[in-house]
Length: 179
Image (cartoon, rainbow, N blue to C red; front, side, top):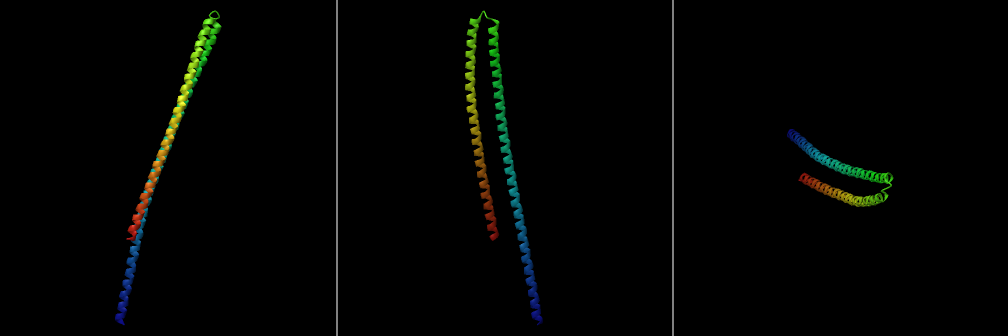
């Protein structure tokens, strides 16, 4: 009986020690899992920050382009205003010349016709220039849209690649856990 009691006591201690070792192993695995999860979250945070920076850069680029378009529009409006003022001044001069010199009416009529022809040519040239600017603006806008689509496509491909890498890493971690 004494021997049996000793054997049972030794066996109980071994069982307790085995449970303790198993519990320590489980706790160590939990710590490792927690560390891996922290690293994964850090990597996700870095990726999110990178995406936020890219989004901010896209917004900034868009704002710069919009600002440039607005500046060009204002510049064209000012040019048109100057041309309008010049045209009005030209017409005012023609009227003044008519009133001042009745004697030279015929000569003045010839000059007026010449000036009107020049004004028409200037207007025609202005219209042609305006049409050229419209075509150029449209082309520029199409290039901007194409550039933005290409950039979005590249970003989408980068996201897919990043997801594939993450999936591969998770599969590798899963495989390592199974080992």
